[in-house]
Image (cartoon, rainbow, N blue to C red):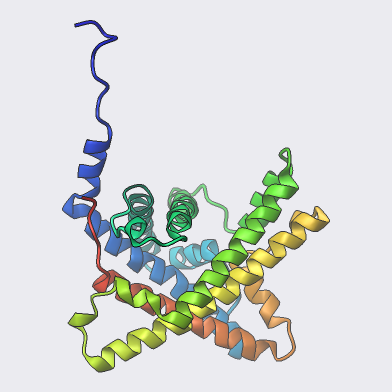
Length: 284
């Protein structure tokens, strides 16, 4: 048989089999736990900054540096790096194979949700890479990644438009978080039957408070990305740490920062509950 008539290799089948492997569920759960640890550190440091003199507002990279500086920091950071990598793989599975079957629910936002999973995979892949660089001594413990990436995009053709569109997209994500918090729709992904009624109420409260706090932070990030695009000034961009600092500088800033930071701690606890009780569907 000639090469022209030979069938093309089926690449989807092995990929789907890999996505359905029992280790994928373990990596996904590890990923939710790692994500929870990162947000816990961000929230804890911001809470300390709001109410004491020992904390600071920082972003995800700053949280990784804090982990590295702890006793047995390299071991802890290596575990976080593996977990973040697992979360990246799970996001890719959600984006490509749609194991939760969102496309079958006739939801207009289903395609956007899958795009969101792909973007989450990209963002957490960068964070996992940062963790690896810190482990091997090549990572930076300073700087602002959001401003750096904004400057890189702005240096490209139509860079201002790209940054502006990114800002609008992040604001859209923030709105979706507020909607999730209001509707408590996140509960459908959890195995609530394994919890008592009282525990279910706590999970619902933690999820609502935490996701709403995350919405506040993402709303600020998106707003400043839009401002950076309008003014052609990447220095106006803000990441998580910069957004928390903006809250601290408002009237009654310590209280506002304290509430949002406590919400991020609540979100971290919700992520840990996801690691234990989330329904991890496998691709068909």
